[in-house]
Length: 115
Image (cartoon, rainbow, N blue to C red; front, top):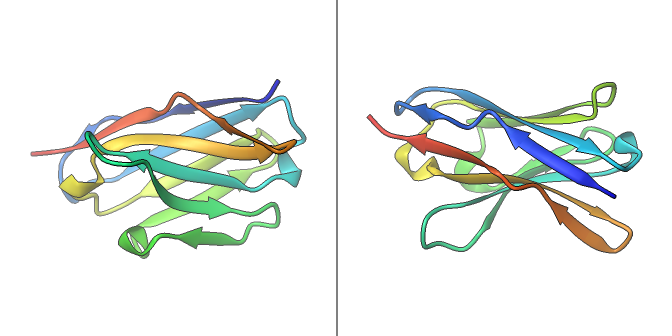
């Protein structure tokens, strides 16, 4: 069974930084592409970015130049480094992987950007 667990969310001031982690189990981690999504209160869940098995990354425009996704194939972790955080980045952040024709999600970690 694929299992994803996110961590690292916190309350941070505008302009601050956070690093989120997603640890994955139940699959051959190094072979899969992982995505980060987020959902703000009363809004649809939105795509933030992704990292392919080979390390290629992709980001939505609103986080380019501020967020960086990386992976550790030894410890089966995907990271989301978030810099210069803005109030509009406030959301619950989720890790996602597609495996055997199914999408698997973690329970998310809450990020609040506020002074």
